[in-house]
Length: 366
Image (cartoon, rainbow, N blue to C red; front, side, top):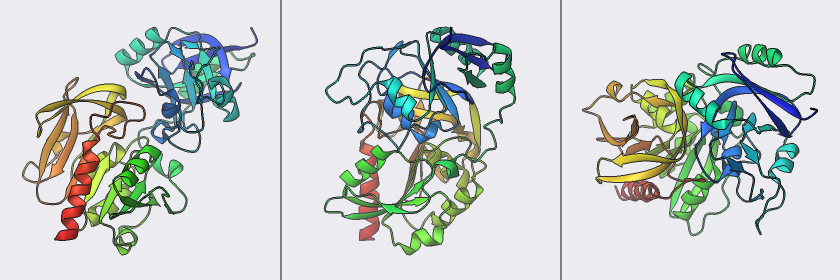
């Protein structure tokens, strides 16, 4: 059939389905997301740069797409995998179908495969390189060979590829009380909306901006954003963060959390298949409460590598006991691995933006 598509993994497993979106080929690390809604936010999250995303919820596309539910200027995924791509969409906010949206941004998709089997395989074997082939003359053997020829994500700097080229001022601040400089390692727009909603004037700067340039802006706080890939190759960012510590309040999430851990002398490691979705249970060890949280990461900070006399563990994942948050015992510095801004996901952790505002207020008064 002319609209056949093949998804091949580097270990030789293949899945044959129907092509939708852009009729082209794509390669990347194959990962899965467990969110039931929010597929447009998933597509446009820069943390997915270099990846082919599988949605575990079986029906995707039923409410279409719009110009508002985006976390960046365009889709960031390499490819999109669903069980069923809804042929009909219905929402008063929708402007076009998922299929048309992916075609517009040249993102290939595949539907009609057994996503349960694919996800179980990834859980058992770990995230793998994969290749999505939608040319009618393509073969499974070609797709497997293409998957095996892809570069590994470990050791690659993906943040500079999604960071802003020049700094800019986020326009939504009203009656600002705090001046925040946000490092863009792949920042999501809802983070900027929430910072602005907490009376922050936010200046977004590129991933490679020197710490001295940030301090010259006289910020009340520095935010370290989410982003894609392996944190260890980002030596420039780790060095800049070290030069900021103890001088200004710092709040990091996701990749920013991992970079902060490295800057404090810790180590990171790659998870078998990562955490991606809107239903991860996290225990706040300080407040003695459980939060249901949104995640999108494939690496984690090793808690054993952090110095207990300097670092207090604040959050742990209840599924696998991985480190989800910490704060410095002396400096106004804290971070979480998950996404308190959600989009998509629950809002259990929005209080973290209040905590950041409190730290900046204390810094102003000191």
